[in-house]
Image 1: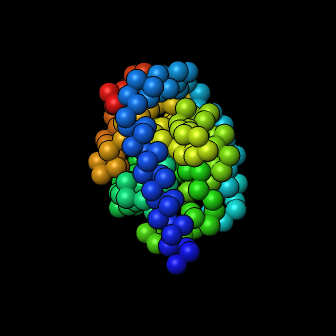
Image 2: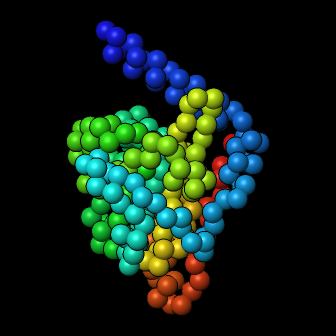
Length: 203
């Protein structure tokens, strides 16, 4: 019973935080644009542990395309939808030479449970102090509550940001990433420049 009450309270607080964030469009736009990473920037390095305690860093993915996506909370509706679409499209992503890595402030135990429940075939990293999330401009704080915003960064094999998404629709996002990877790789082959930054939603 105590566990149920605690779970309900956590869900309620998280819901209030998300609603408050959605109701502050001017502050949100300012936060997103302040020192925001853009296509062509060097991706910030990170050293984060996965669900099994193995430490991953950006250099581990050198020579590969990396889809680094930040999300608010394990096993919540939008985050589950997003993760399951990446799961269902993982073969297409791997065929494009891309690795998918999710990051949230959840701990390793939460990531293990989330991955096992939905059979996620990609890495989830834990950033409990939010430093990496903040380095990518994706940290949201409301009083004592902190969580990652739903942002995605496509990082090219040289470690540079090729595309930024700050307005993510969980159901369509995996397909959107596949389309963009094809475009980026075709442009790269043709000698075109880097990708672009998708604008944030108006609020």
